[in-house]
Image (cartoon, rainbow, N blue to C red; front, side, top):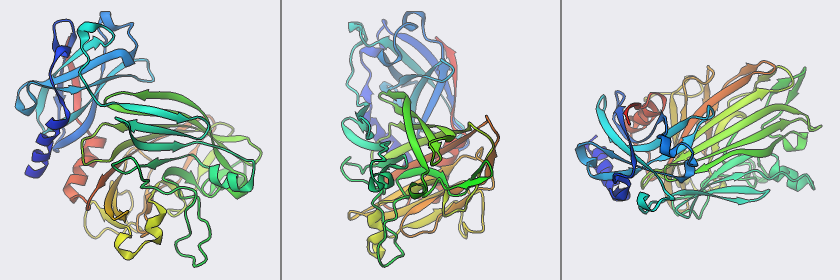
Length: 429
């Protein structure tokens, strides 16, 4: 763990020496952070706060936030924070906890100010931003570098365009923001010599191939030729700042007549991370049965929440084929269910990449992982009924980084930090 601590110390290079944000003009909130029973490295944390009266009417995106830890390695260094409004119309204060030893406590002071006021200062900080290619895709950028791309176009003008646009999904870019690490609609069948198009494995995506509704079975995995689509309706929220970027979109799972079977609210949150991490993404989705009972059915190969590596992994040499790691040795994902996480490593563009997929324990069980295909598609599948008018909420976390597969313990710690992470308590303001 000393190596992780050394890496944590290196994070100081990305934070900013405390400046005018901690001047007397700022409003201050003191918070206590209690770490879980594992070491935490760059873990997102948040607390619901009551905004000071002077800032209560200021738009959240115009509130400047900087945090300092009392004592330890982060004394006299400020770390950017961000105010986000939750679905209960409460103010949440978010920041990324650089380092916390297992079972430790620390005290932090947050300085809040109206960034529009000259006294608040404008300390330089890298931020997330959105760039919408209207009707086609939404790019997420960090300091101008592309991080993800949400593909939401739908075009039924031709058979070809239907096949290309029948599913919404997220792409992941490499560390330079130039090349894709994930697959799109141009994927091929890796096991067929005639290379027939195999377009339904797309980046980060979700679906079930044997969804039952109204006495009929629907394929929301392959979809296109059967007239089923996942059709983006609108964006419900777009938030971006120095700590996180959040997109919430409404997606209708429609039958061939255009009637909606499931109304999905798909929320993705990407968190600020230091190098070498490429992506830390939380995928929260709410599936609502809007016209009657729905049964999500299928099999591990064709259902659930999935990540698919770029198609060059499928077409490449053995050196780039995907390999998998589990929370302990001797795991067979075809026989061992409800695994807490799975990690995949693959080669692409003469580089190695690793992906950790975390399945939150609150998600339905049994969860069966498809984590053995060497072309790089993996994820967890389950069967579940959603009663008419009810909503099924699901939570996942995806981490992507360069290089060889991380150690099992590091991956286990990241899992623990997600499901039982640091707790934040507001002490005073």
